[in-house]
Image 1 (spheres, rainbow, N blue to C red):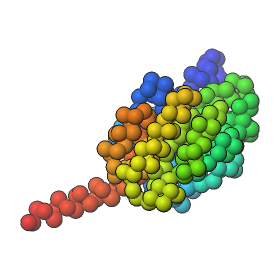
Image 2: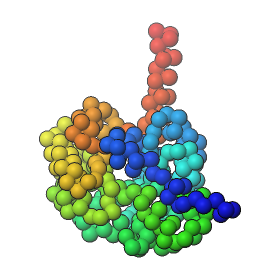
Image 3: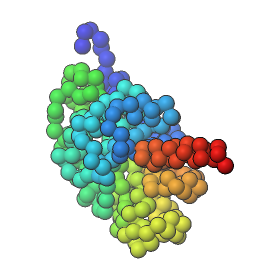
Image 4: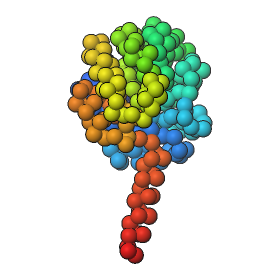
Length: 270
């Protein structure tokens, strides 16, 4: 290391975890459309703390995902990836590629959450395999125990609640060691309950209240998802204690700006 006695944990920081530790609200956006690295710098300039690349609902490649994660690390935006399946084959590859955490969709039990943690964390916390020098550590070589400890500390595991079953088991899922946050996916949750699109339904507020209570009990955090068109409702859940808001996708942002500009020009001739 050229005589520079730098420690792994001095290089590797997760600004999202630091903000959560200060009880601050994290601002996130989702990437489904953009394949180029510029999106990371745009997110930083716009003021986002975090991006998550959505491999569950896009055709984004792992290569493009890795490139965007690297750009985000350099820009100072925390990169996460929502995996298309909660398997080690996906989890380890996106983490090795530069992600600082994963969003695990459709978690419905503590055992499923434990399996995700095992795949995301190095021993002794999990079973993640060693792949050599990592981009998070600037490809430097560190003693394995030191590097693994720094990576385990920085890597976030966000489990997504998308069903009534998950809400019923919130306490036992949140209690799993290594789970950092629950992201509530309102759209799929409502659909599973038979109330698709009914964002103001009492079941939604009950789900947040129960999940926030479980997270407070176990020292974890709650994220708001699926409410990009309902900012007042999202604000209500933040007031209740949620500490991350997924604001929408790059598709939504681009379309909204395009629509507004087209509308402005049409109104010029009225």
